[in-house]
Image: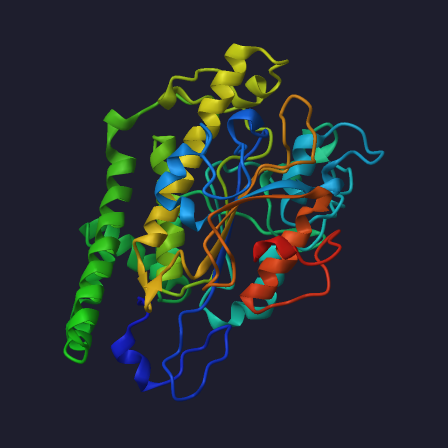
Length: 437
C-alpha cells in the first residue's frame, strides 16, 4: 500500500515530483489536479456572485462551499466555442462532455470514426504520469456506453467520457468504488491481484490486515507526529472500506432510480458520489496518482433526484422555458452537486500534506460546458477553481474574464502551475492571467 508523505522519512532520499527543489531541503509535496463534470448546465442566477474580487457573497447554489470559500475561485465568462454546433446541428449534450477538457470540436458520428482531442488531464498525465503508479484516474457515477447513437447522431463515447488520451481514444471511467479501491491498493499483478481481492471478500478482511506487520515496523522508525499521521491515514482507509461494504449491503439506503445501475455500486447516489470523492482523496494522499477526473453524471443525464425530493428527470427539467417551479428544482439539483464538491474539498483541506494540506497543493476544476440547459449555450460557463496550487493561485475571489475567453486558457494556466507547460490546449489563445493578482 502506498502511504502519504512523511516529514521524518523525507531525509532518507529524494522523492520524485513535478517541482525542483534544492538538494539539501526536504522534497515539498507535489501538485495535484482534478476535473469534475456536471451535466445539463446550471441555473446561473442562483450560481453567480453579485460582486467581484475577494469577500463575495455566496449565492444559493454555492452556499455549501462556505467553509472553503477562501480556497475557491469563481470564474465567470469562460467559453467553449467548440461546444457550439459550428455547422453540425443538434447534439449539444454530447459536445458538452467531449469538449469539456479538450476544447476540440468532436466529429459528428455515431460510428467508430470518433474524433475529438487530447484532454488537459491526459496532457498532464502523458508528461508527468510516470512519477506515480497510475498516470491518471478516471471516475464516474453512471456507466454510460462506448458505442451507439446517444445524442442526435453523436456517438455515446462523446456523452460518457471527458478524458481523451488521443483524438480518437476516450479513456473509460470506473464507476464502482470497490473496483477503484482494489485498483489503488492491491499491488499483486494480474490474477494475483484478483485472488487477493477474492480472498479478502471471502474472509471479510481489510486490506490493512495484509500490511499490519509492515506498518508496525515502519512506525518504529518514525517521529511522533508521523506515527500519529500514519494512524490517522490507516483509520481513514479502514473507514472507507467499511463504508463501501455498508453502501452495497444496506437495504435501508435503497432509492428507486430511473437509470440502469451498474452492479455492486452504492444504492444511494449521494453516497456513491462521496465514495468517489474519497477515492480521489486517497489516491492523492498516497501519491497513487496526481491527476483525476470525475463525471458526477453523464452528459444529458435524465436521472431523478428523489434523495432531495426532485422526482423529475434532470435533463427534462433543464428545458425549463423559464418555468419558476422547474428552475427551483434545477437550482436544488445544482446545489446538491455542489454540496458533494464541498465534501471533497473539505476532505482535501482536512488531509495534511507536508506543512500544509492537500487542498493547498491542488487545483480542482468543477463545472459544465453548457451554461443554461434550456438555451444550450456555451458561453459564460459555470466554472469553479479550488485550491491555490501551493501559493500559485490567488484564491477566494470571483473573477469576470473578457467575453469569449476560451476555457482552454484556464487549462493552459493549470498545466503551467502543474509543471507541465504547453504551447496550447484545444482552442486556447494564451494563459489566463486572472489567476493571480
